[in-house]
Length: 105
Image 1 (cartoon, rainbow, N blue to C red):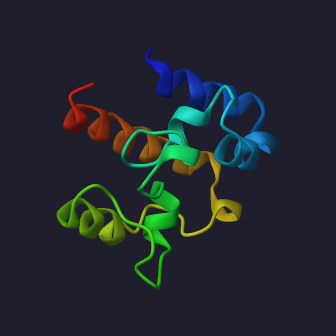
Image 2 (spheres, rainbow, N blue to C red):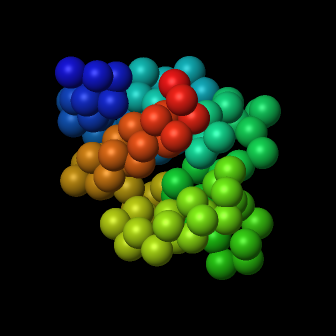
């Protein structure tokens, strides 16, 4: 069980904290919502998956244009934090694992 599985398990026990995990930088499940460049929000130059997927104005991006396009094309990613449900969490884990691999972490 990796940190993403642990975060999902935590949020299954505390589903009312999904928005907190997305907003707060020190939440036990924050790893699911880290910006695509892997930096904390204050230092990030990139958006998180939800920000990129729901960005109608091309303000938020991933580290590459190709990755940004792939995220925007993944219709499994909710476009707003208020729309994130427990059943969406494995999609966030899938993407975060991929992003880690691409960053060489």
